[in-house]
Image (cartoon, rainbow, N blue to C red; front, side, top):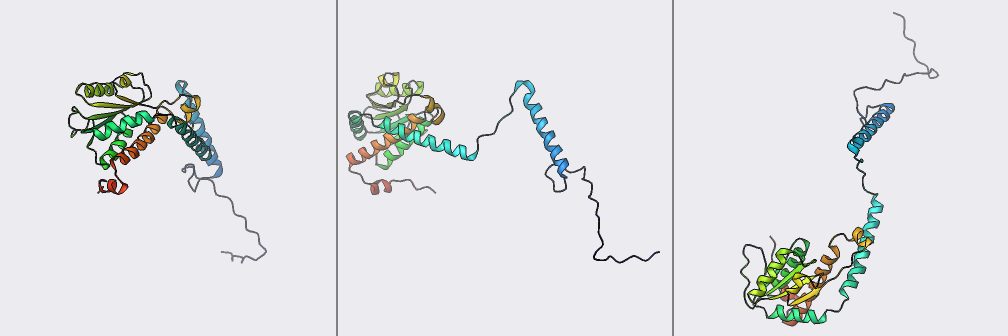
Length: 250
């Protein structure tokens, strides 16, 4: 066996590059650059083929985070501007009549469907905290509506069948009905003693920045919160009084 020559500092060492493994996938640390590129091309082509089958268009992801943030800010500005316009409409007469009904009723009932129902529930919570005997219609523990009671119903169109039925039954038994609606001449409006009108114009920007009933629902929450403050004043209640009736969540 020949003696091995010791490497000198001026010797050149040539190392052959290892062949890329064939059993690794794209993104694996052992994948070569060429294989990763080929895998990406194949995946892209497969996606295009799948998207093209049956005339379907491949699903596009949403806009960038910056664009989404811009749309959110635009929507918020649109909501604030239009809510201020909607709530600036003169309603002092209807508000006064509503306060009279709410503060003199034996029991108060509220009703609404969907997001309108959520706005009604938020109002009911404040009424309970003001010491008013208040219920949401449809709950299993809700008593029957009777003569001398009050019913507040929220419906944008005023044509929701269940809302109309509630109003008609309430009037038939002698209860007073307050409706929050976008249509004064609707069936619900005709069945009400007092109509708190919230008319939100539909526009191109509205469909993009405040879709469906967003303006009506947001305006309802704000209008009813204003009504809470006036009922609070009429009853001589304070925030401390309301806090004492606030539910303890455990």
